[in-house]
View 1: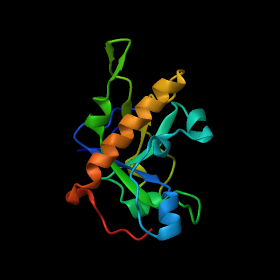
View 2: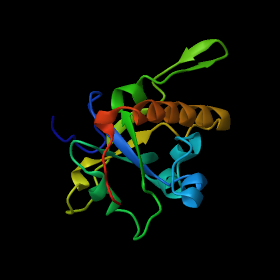
View 3: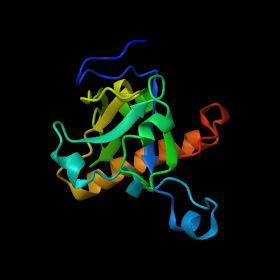
Length: 162
């Protein structure tokens, strides 16, 4: 596999990961009692302003979670790692008015002007800026389902101290 050009599709066989904030359960009890929710996949105001609007993620083959964490603000609370397969993201569909709507989300290489290790693995999930609020929420819910499916995949788990 090779790194793609800016805005080129990430190969569907690759896994990406998203760094997210721990739940309140984790903050209070120091253990995760809940799994990914649609809130973990909301676009920030900065994400919405980016071109194209995208949810920041990292291709695991080119960036480690520790490297990705180094691109966040110091002491960022984003210490939970959610794994998603690019092909699974592209295969998300919704039934709207009894019609199957697909090709709503994509995973693209988002090149960043950085020389630090791991920068080459930056990617983004696009399509989450749908105008319809319920559609956006449903798409985020589908992403959470994929992330939760991968939580039990032992090969995806890492002991990373962020």
